[in-house]
Length: 160
Image: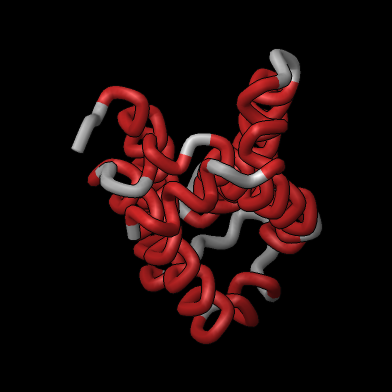
């Protein structure tokens, strides 16, 4: 892995990211905005599943999910660019690997939701209570995305 780290750090893209004073703050800003879209929209949907905002049909909130997906894509791209810019920060960082694990678990949670609960939720009207399985998935989603945020913040403070 260290050879990969050395190679990655020697690329022109890595140099561009770290040697231009405007690139890193721009990436940070985009990463934050992507996170706001992702967690804000997914969080609204999850809170509705947990029984908050009961006057809103879940299908109406579900229409916002493409914006949450856009936020995820922005975060994925900026995350890769952070990694390319400073691979030595991430390659041996336990918090980074925890963040990746939580993202993967959140992805599995989404697949479980769409495989088991999506149709039931789409049929819900205002005031309807979500099934227990949907509530469990929503609570897991909120916890996993909070874990992603916390582990992401910790990356800068963990050294091997």
